[in-house]
Each structure stands twice: as C-alpha cells, then as structure tokens.
Amino acid sequence: MKLGVIGLGTVGEGVLKILAAEGSRLEAMFGEKIEVVRVCDIEEKSFSFGEYNFTDNYRKILEDGEIDTVVELIGGVGVALEVAREVLGSGRNLVSANKHLLALHGKELFELAEKNRVKFYFEAAVGGGIPVLTPLAEGLFPNRFERIRGVLNGTCNYMLSKMEEGMTYGEALRDAQERGYAEADPTFDVAGIDTGHKISVLSYLAWGELVDFSSISITGIDKLTVEDVARARSEGKRYKLLGEAFKEGEDLVVRVAPQLVDTDELLYSVGGVYNAVEVEGSYTGKTIFYGEGAGMDATASAVVSDIYKVIAG
Amino acid sequence: MKLGVIGLGTVGEGVLKILAAEGSRLEAMFGEKIEVVRVCDIEEKSFSFGEYNFTDNYRKILEDGEIDTVVELIGGVGVALEVAREVLGSGRNLVSANKHLLALHGKELFELAEKNRVKFYFEAAVGGGIPVLTPLAEGLFPNRFERIRGVLNGTCNYMLSKMEEGMTYGEALRDAQERGYAEADPTFDVAGIDTGHKISVLSYLAWGELVDFSSISITGIDKLTVEDVARARSEGKRYKLLGEAFKEGEDLVVRVAPQLVDTDELLYSVGGVYNAVEVEGSYTGKTIFYGEGAGMDATASAVVSDIYKVIAG
Image (cartoon, rainbow over all chains, first blue to last red; front, top):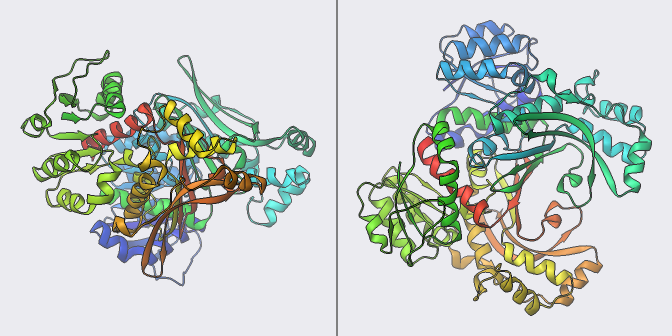
C-alpha cells in the first residue's frame, strides 16, 4: 500500500508513530507493507521516529499517481471536502477521522465511494480509540435498532466533572483550556455540535439514514449552571451531555442535550475524557462500548486499524 | 449460501428465527440469499416461524454436497469436534459458538481452516451478543495488549448477586437452576471452566497463542461463602468471577478466580446475566465491551452476524 497522509496534528503524528513502531509486526500479520509516500501539513514538521517526504501543498498528494490510499486528518469541511471528493472520485481509498465532514457531506461521499468501488473508512470519527462504528455496522446488523445514546465529547464530560466539584461553567472551561482539553474557541464542543456530528454518524450506520444536520435539536452544556449540576448531585444523579437517536414511528429522531443519568446506569460512570456508546437492539438488548474517546494514541490506533482494513477488506 | 445447522437448542432455534424474520432485509443488504438446506438435532423439532428439512443424523448434513456453510451449535467436544474437522477439512465454512471446542482444539481447527482456505468464525463463543472477538482481532490489533479481564459467565454473576442479597451458595445455585440460568450439573459454570474456555479464546485473539488448557489456574465461585461475599460488601467491594490474561515477561498467564472489584471500576456494575470484557492496550488504554452474555436472541444474533460475515468476507 502506498499511503499519503494529509494533516499532521496530534492524530496525524500518532498515526505515523504507530505505523513506525508496529509496521513490521503488522506487515507480517497482513502480508503487505505500508509505504508512507508523502505527508502534508501547512507547516513543516519533523518527527524523531522517522523521516518523511514532506510537502506543505496537499495537491502534491492528490496528484501523486503512486499513492493508492489517502489519510485525511485535516478536519473541518473546507480542504477536507475537496480532498475527500478528489480521492474517492479518482478511485483511491480514503481513511478519515472527520465526523464534521461525514455529518454534513457523508451522503455524497458514501455514494462516491460506492460508485468508484473504493474503500472509505472512518472508525476514528466517533469514540476515538473505541471500536464502535465497525461493530455496530458489521456485528450488530441483525438487530432492528431501537435507540443509541452516547457520551461522545470528552471536553464536555471533563467540564461537567469539574462543575460537580464546584467550579462554575467559566472556571471549568478555563481549566479545560489550560489542560489542552478545550480549544481557544470551544463552541463546537460546549454547544454540542461535535456530539451532534458523532450521533449523526452513528445513526447513519444503525438506520442507513443520514439526517439533515440542521434538523437535529442541539443543546450544549453552555447553558448549565453549577447550581443545576449541584441539584442533580443532591438527587444522586449526574448530568451527561448525551447524543441520542431513536425511531419515532417512521421518523428518525437525532438530538443532543444534557440529560440526568441515574447511578444504576453505566453511562453514569463514564468520567473525564472517556466516551461510551450504548446501543439498544431488538435481539441483543443493551450493548455498551466504552473507552478513550480522544488523545493521540487511542484515536491514531483507530485510524491505523482502518488503514489495514483497506488492505484486508 | 447453502446452510446446514446442527444443534437446535436455544441458540439454534434463535438463529433460525432471526434468519426467518430478518432474511429479506439482510438479503438486500448483502446481495445474497441464505437458504437453510437442512437442520439437525437429536430429537425432532418444529418451529412456528418456518418449515425446515429436518434430520436427526448429523452425517446427512456433513455428506450433503450442496451445503457450503455449516453452523455447529451442539457444544462440547464429542460430535462437535468431528463436525468441525470434517466441515473445515472438506473445504466448507464453519460458524460455531463452541468455546469449549475452541479452547481445547482451536489450534488444530484454525490451522485446518487456514490450510483449506475456508472461513471459521465464532463471535458468539465469548460474550454472547456482544461484538468483542471481532473488534479485538480486527479493530484493536495495532496495540500491544497488556491485559484482558472479563466477567464472562452469567450464571456465576447471577449467583453472586443473590449471595450479596444474603442467600447461601446452595440457595443461590438452586435459585439459578429454578430460573433455568444454571444446568442440573452446574460444574462447568460454577467451577470456572466455562470462564476458562472464554478467556482462552480471548487471549488467543490478543496474543496469537492458545495456552494449554490444563496450564490455566482455575478457581470457581464454589468455594465462596455468603460470609466472604458479605465481608466484601462491608468494605464497599464486590466479588466477580474474572477470567484474566496478561503477559509476564515472555509468558502468557491465563487464569480464572473470584476477585474483589472496587466501586469505581466499571466491572463492579456488571450485574445479573450481563457480561463485560475489559481490554488494556498500549495505544487505546482501557476499552470495555458490555452487553448480554447469554440468552437465545443475543447469542443467536452473534451467530447470524458470523453467517453473513462468511458472505461479506
């Protein structure tokens, strides 16, 4: 496999690091070597674990006829959309962790991949290092799905824990920013948009339907006060920002809101930057997938598993 | 696909039921029809949801040249071993839920499947309806695995809950037997052997090594008293029968024993007939798979997903 990687932030660096560290073992397992032909970012980067053919012009990767598989880790829906369209449209495989892109343009991209008979995998887009999209689509499919609920955003989950300890919303946000868990502009996380993207992708895999993103009712944690959180605690409950999807008659309802969760639910115990996805199916009842929802290594591991899935599949 | 099903107990009936109920939807998804050519059990069975070509002689399925895939749901290592050897040896695919067979004869059968280039899937052997073997092998493989722990036996887990409520071991066992959770001879469950089979299979998938079953240290719940359980509760802890596997230097250690679990661990909250498997990896940290570990529908759903995996893979 001849790989191009676009976007060398935390996850991109993690992918190169895992490929460098585990490459020979995985080559033996899969019977194929992965050659990283070219890597791209807007600013030049070098890494202690390997030497790479660097470019700051992503078009060089798109126009490199040798590359058969592209890993898109840019995020957003600008250059990432151009990259995805061009990679899939030209008959090459795409691996992405971009839930934003999937939630807004998934339909077009899934059709493009099918039409061109190429592989398009995105396990890392939801739940970071937790294998959840593939088991949902390839393991639980005999079910009629009844409901999916998930703690899908580590930043919000961390802030809610801090508010339970008595911090105000503003203090919790500053704390999360100081630790690097929240971005300078935290809107996508705290307003629930990131959770909305992720529950969209999950519900697409469960019901085969990608809802119009603007139809999703989204409430973030930015309207919760430390008093709300304290009142929940005094009742033995806890607020969790949940992405939720279920069928109401023929309609697929997808929504995001902080919800009170009881101590006897496993989602109650999902702390800090952990994520969990609870899937209710007609045959399997409740199945829960839990693990590290973010972080360099965990998310990069999911991207690497998708890269090898391109080989295996 | 031309299917033969051997063993029409709870899970076998569930598999036929799901194939009958979901067949046309899944045929559209996978582009292939599954025809149940023949079914077998030692005593004649009929089902309200469909008519089947029944035989009480499993050799009729083995000798039916039309059948390309056999589902073995007999259990044990007698006829099931003969069936598995003959199916794989004659170039047909095998789907099984038989952890006992895998733990004792897995090595021979995996080699046979590889040599004959046929598919051998067994997701239902561990964790019932929880997709855990496939995500471990096909999702988490970039990791170096550090440890696996699991609550893998619903019967023991149910009995331990009853002992927490004050029942003696004998009362909890009778209660479980009356509800159909424990068999007349409960040894395999309560002595930890079933858990041993399951942790063996998990560790094979994580480390590629099937330990000699006789080398596994196994302690069941049958030596626990209601006083032990009460003492644990008074310390805010709880006994769980855990299957555990980890590397100690070059050695793979696999063992089964009741262990004290703290309230802050998710395994603490795994109640009744639920199962959970916790996988610790070098990149993904702790990942937990939780769900219904037994029961007709949940386990049958995992078998059905394996049947379609034969088609898809």
